Length: 388
Image (cartoon, rainbow, N blue to C red; front, side, top):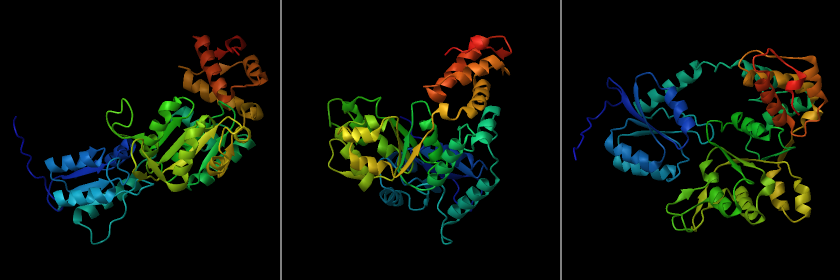
């Protein structure tokens, strides 16, 4: 086997590029930071875990490491100690646990650290705003929240509540009928928060069999059960520093509710087959279309868990209670699903407005998508294209 001998790269203050390693399990954060450092001054590499980062440090002389504190395998201080013993000249710039932004270095920090911090600050100030497409433009103007559409008073109130709570780490409980957009509101809470560059992890409590749900939520160690051939972190741990969205929380099995409550109260998770607890920093947003108070009376949902999740409850209005938004929603969905500009006849719009919409916005979206297909080469959606 041929040994490849890597020549040392220039250090801070030398000419040429310097080796920079971004260490984070969050792909969005890694891409964001890498895109801001395309000056040619840095030779950029990435690692998903502490172990992978240490392996790359052995093979390449690193100038700077951008370190995410939420590593899946090592604590930040443990990683820095190992790196210091292995590469004493490598400088480490930690990332803020919520925003993902580099923590400002002290004046006494190394030259490479100070140069990197200044470059990141400049690139952040000069970064152009993302250009929205036509459908996104209309959504933003109409709602002011990512992918939320509507100008009815109930929607305006919803936007205000989301903007208020997003900046805090308060637990949010989203209620409302199926199809009202609870998943969009959960994502908006995340994207408007200081955690927006960290993971947004979704788990549907109704979609995973009870026997597997505990392992999905909390993780497991090798040998914990038949088929556990390697250790794995759970969805809660995977959301480190970010937001965990627990959809259909009313379907969470009663046996797991006490374990979820312990995580919410103590900020710790214990993997299946292990006695060790792991500290996690995760913001929780839960959603349900069930009547949790009724489930509490029927002994199907823990009352203490309900109060822990519903610190800030938000109820989403059904479409039938904001029918003034229907024409706007139709226009947005036409832009999304039609290959050309389509109009809507008065008869078609009247048919849409006379419907009760038990499936809410999701049902409307499906009806408009179907109408776009049926309109084929025509330029107007007719009433017979509206199948309800």
